Structure formats: structure tokens, C-alpha cells
Length: 290
Picture 1: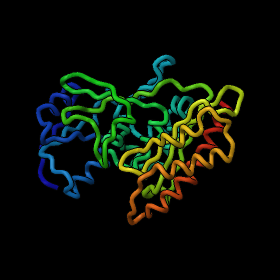
Picture 2 (picture 1 turned 90 degrees about the horizontal axis):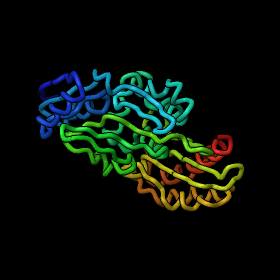
Picture 3 (picture 1 turned 180 degrees about the vertical axis):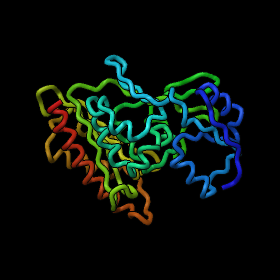
């Protein structure tokens, strides 16, 4: 790695001041699980790193019945996985986190760092988008809240400005009669993900009719992909095996995967059909019990 200056921030305010000063040459260091790899591979060469890992003010999980969930950007994957509150209110997040890399990685890696790295195979984004997540971005100029669905723009690229820091992830209160399921396929446990999907299904109370649906996938496009046509096919209809199968096939046509050493584009499209079908059925079962 090339030499760089190191600044351990003692507060969010100080971090905002530092990144405003060094925005053209600096990078924010949270858990560092992705950033250190990029530095070692010389894909990025900042002249300074602003370390925010020690900011306790950005590590928390809070819930309010009216406003929903608030998670600090430095909350670790392991904290999310093990949180009783998450397990009760947003169980899909706890289930999803169990499949994120290894325990060692989850103990140190942060949810905010994961989202800001914008890796197209990242695990948390699809489930968070399916749950309607928003992000609070802060800077010395002020703050703004953006939908996570609109946060990613391309491979490893987001809308975050050079002087901004992701401070908080926000989720609305759980929707009644709603089930959310996350599934992914990888060749080995904790290995490179080939395809993943998160499906949220809301049903009319006491019926099999789909009131709302959201299908989100990763590793099949440059950014987490929200399938508009497949979800629209389910809304307002009684969910049957045939309809779910149709939606899964439609979802595969909306993808834009690439071929690499792990899987071909064609193989990924076939996996989409299988995972979306299975995840939709599971989400439907959860919704009827919710």
C-alpha cells in the first residue's frame, strides 16, 4: 500500500470536518473489510484515511412503534444478527446476517461500510430495500435522507458526496400481514455469492390475495435490482404456485447478469427462477402467519 495520513476521529462532528477538508484525497475507514482490500490491490490511493470505527455514537439499534428502526452505521453485522429486537421485529435481517461471510468478519464489519462499498454481491442491501430502508447522510453542510433503493448508481458507486458520511439506516415499522424472506446461493458456505434475493409479500388479512409485493436481487446487475414487472404480476391476485412460478420466470428476464469465473450469465438467470420462486413461497407463508 502507498503511504497515507491517518486521522482517528473522536466525534462525528470532527469526522465531518476532516472529510470536508480532505474530501478530494481522503477516505472514511469504518470496519475496513472492503477498503483495506482495495488499498492493498492499489485500486484506490487516498492520501489520508479518516477512521470513524471508534465512534460509539454511530453504533446502536433502536426501535420506536411510530418511527420504526434506527441503526447506527457502525453497528456490526454480528450485533444485527444477535439483536433480540431485530429477531422479533425484522427477523429477515438476523437470518440474512448469518450468511454474511464468517463470524470473524461479522464481528468487525459494519452495516454502513458494507452499504457504502456498493459491492453488487453484498448481502444486506436486498433485504433492507425490501423492508423500505432509508439512509441518513451527514456532512458539515447538514444532513439528508435518501431511499436505499436510490443509493446505488453503478458497480461500487453510490450517490454519496465526497464530503458526506453515512450515519444511520432507518426502517419503517413492520407492515401487518407481511412476510419477508432472504435466500442466496453460493458454491461454499461463506463463499462468493452467485445470486441472492429478498422477497416481501403483504396479503389481505385472512386471505391468499397479494396486497403488495417487492422482489429485490443482487449479483444479477450492477446494483441491487428491484424487479418491477415480476412484483406487479403478483399484486392484487390470489397467490398460487402457477402465478409464483410465472413471476419467478419474469424476474429472470429483468436481470442483467455478467459471466465470470464463478458462474455464467445464463446460470445466474436460471438461479433467479429457482430462488425467487422459493423465496416468494416462504414470504407468502410468513405473511399468512404474521
